Image (cartoon, rainbow, N blue to C red; front, side, top):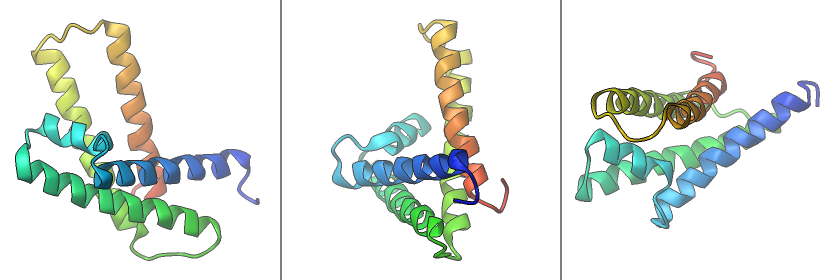
Length: 134
């Protein structure tokens, strides 16, 4: 483990997060985060289901690719897949911020900051995992 324990655990966390969201989106158990994201963007019905399915497949493949990369099996398309998920996440963050500002949601400031921090952590992890930007 030449990268250190922190990097190892971070890669495991990113991979598991992507795999879990991919499986949740594909099994329609709860749709995972992608259902929430695309609903907030404004999709519904069949269009929502298509976007959730596509994002879920991308996330699942990207998560598996992150795990494979840990064993020095490099997949050339990994950066592109993770970058796609990062862009989706960035749009979601912007929409959430606009919603918090314009709709005056009832959540208190500390809850909003907590949720914003979580989404920024996911987003930044995706950017770091995609070597094209991070």
